[in-house]
Image (cartoon, rainbow, N blue to C red; front, side, top):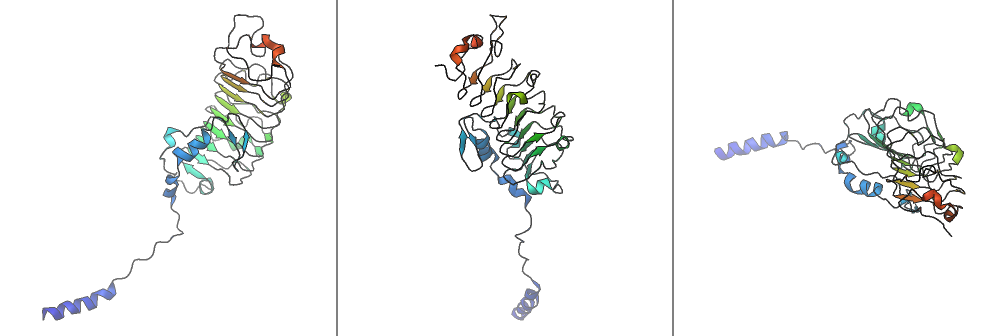
Length: 292
């Protein structure tokens, strides 16, 4: 009797059990962004202190690029939960950082508020407008390397009072914009900048500027009024033909020494540096370049 009851129970119950529906593979899984190796591939990329690399991997110069390193706060960070932002569907948004690299965008995308780091390398951006950063005053690092930027509106960076690192390398600029006051690193390597495209006081008030990269441009002279804070200056492969005793030193003060300047690169210019030895009397090391 008990055996018959058990059999009846199984026959009645089993048809009611249905298989669970299959997992939809095409549904978005935002947590997958956390698997991106921010501490390896990105840091390795931005930490290349001796190479400028195009997106196809070609070594375009033996020069120091913008000294960008993955911030410790970015490691292991989760993507933003504000998935309604179009930028965060197109790019990768980590807490405080936006990565929009090699996606062929033609303009600066709308950024989430409180963005601190923007990486938009190797795209097709041609112009930077004042409105692009009007409401994003928290930016501390911007990298626009490898775009097609020809124009930067006056005041485009005027509200970025916290910005410390800016790269405009490998673009089509013929002049420099007004730069934010707290910059420590500025990279404009491989553009089309001539000396008339840099105002006389462009760097004078940048009292925190330590790394200035202007190699592979069309400069005819060394920029004026370089700040005392400068440690690294790259001017290689320009058209510099002359230099004065006041370019780096002070002709009226023979005791003056630039204590922070560690490196000046001027190779690949027409100038013969041996003819201007007094211009380097305040430096601890001679510039790299042609002497004979």
